[in-house]
Image (cartoon, rainbow, N blue to C red; front, side, top):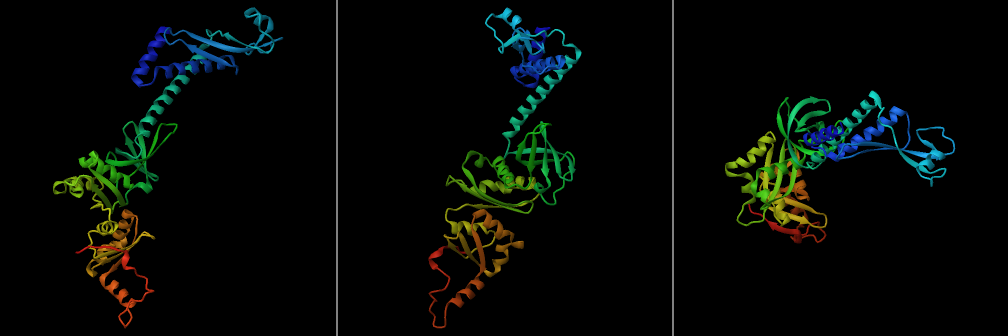
Length: 374
């Protein structure tokens, strides 16, 4: 029987991918629990399962006393000295317990503890596996939609896309396959619980990394991403190789690479711009597709004033200010956009009738870092 037990544990270890020692420890814990329940004791008990022979031993610690009141936790001085003459009152003796009469209840208790340990071990291994997937992209299969979000299947476990992480207007049908960004993996009594997102900028970043070989190799780097999920994303890229066009690599021949990403995001608009170390140039590019005439910058306040042709003002600002807002997020600078005629009017107010510039006027031509032609 003992050999059969070892064989069974080895089989479970192989099939479930759980360490043999973890299972053996579970057996020992089960035996201790069963013994305490069977003999109604809370005494100090330990069990030992020989990993090779399968032999089981249960040991109970007993306090040496003059007169025994609880035979499960105490032993008389006379009997203790029979074991070792050096024992005195108050000493603790560890004695092998009789484990042959556990009965059916004890066996059921042991089985329950073992199964619980197996479940805990499996859940622990599963948690460790998915904890490594935080900030990564996984393919999810839609299961159902409820008030608190969309429940999805993620391979060996399930996940939830909370309502605030769902792209506005996006609908999900059962068995739909979607890419999700893993926000957080947390422990739960039912196994690892995964919170996923369809709106996080990291989803765009990971999709580009998966789709663009030059990004995978490190030749093209993603410098910054600004996203308003479901509407528009701006992504700044830079090439470490002068012979490789960063924007062209991301777009792909006839736009095939970026189109795959756009399709996954349900036709979210994608602006791919080339990052530039010159902040004035970078800001001008970030405001694309609008054309920029001039950029004035204020290093101290990390703010920029951008001048655009009158015909480009609405394009530069974008619908409800979206283009300007995304450009500011992308660059990390405050951006104030003025049309050429607005800028001319402001400048004219600073110049008195005698033609001399007011020295106290709030303008500093030294802040001009560059001018970009249309």
